Length: 199
Image 1 (cartoon, rainbow, N blue to C red):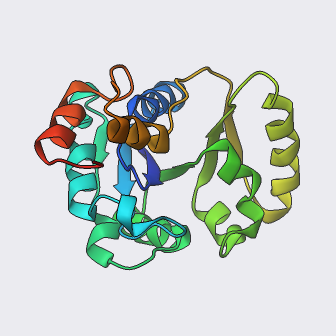
Image 2 (cartoon, rainbow, N blue to C red; image 1 turned 30 degrees about the vertical axis):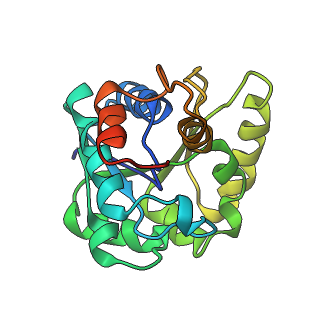
């Protein structure tokens, strides 16, 4: 049985925080594979500021050189439209029926997991993984993990500092002509520059 994690998001653009979080969970869980899965059409996002699905997929592929256990999946891009997490997990379970699945989400999303579409089924398909944003919210996350047990949720909370980066912050800096050094890897910056994204 292999350990495979799903790490989804808009990745608009993918940044150092995403990479550090992926590497932290690969180490903590001894993952065999971590799938970066860009969404095709993120809900509640401005189309004007959203790079195309293909651009975001291409940028994610530039991260896999930093850890050979990172793999980029186009499963949601191919599906098109808006995707429910539960549907992607079902597809992954069909692809990896004998393996253990993990779902990596941010702390804010973790705190609202009970309001997602079919949370019980999500929890039946994967262990839910998140990371504390700071030393103050670790207990809050631990308390919420106890609440989520009523949905059958088994949680993994990583108490480790990873770089806090916002994709919105990166886009705003690019629009202002400010540096994004140390916020994205060199390859992603060059891709953004060459394709004139976020300007």
